Image (cartoon, rainbow, N blue to C red):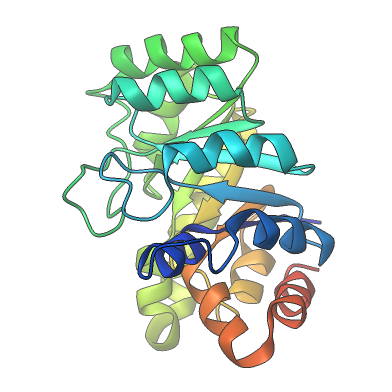
Length: 238
């Protein structure tokens, strides 16, 4: 079964909007795990507009499932954080501080030497590595040369086109995942996956180990409750 890692950035955004500690991010993480999710994902950004660096250290102490930290390793502060916390997995994302959200994957060819170096540093520390990539076969081939353990397929295009041309758009993701499997690279996926489009993705993309979902899941929880929502998403992944 594909694992569900819940991105709790949106919970931190809500907390930060009023100050104080409501909602309690650590308790939400505990409950997410208790309700059945197999991982917690956070993406701290330099301006700490949602997840704060302090949160990451505190979460490390209480997360009992897989802990995944996303971010851009060009930020020394991020690299230092990951090496100190030693999460289960670090997912390298080529975003900038000014971006509202991640919007593209790595160019694993032009950035290959850099990625090799930083991935080696994380793997030496015993941290599983994943890199954010578009569903492009050349980028998958380049990812193999970086030494990464996994890729995370950037699924915004799939989500955007799902209701109009899902049969067409899924093909590149299926092909990318198939190639990754042949190259012995694990496959994760994330960005704009939702209760509506998750099952079709899971059914057509081979070798899918993990999905990371935050915005859609937290939005659904406003209507269905967190426990029920997590169970709904888990059912989509069966």
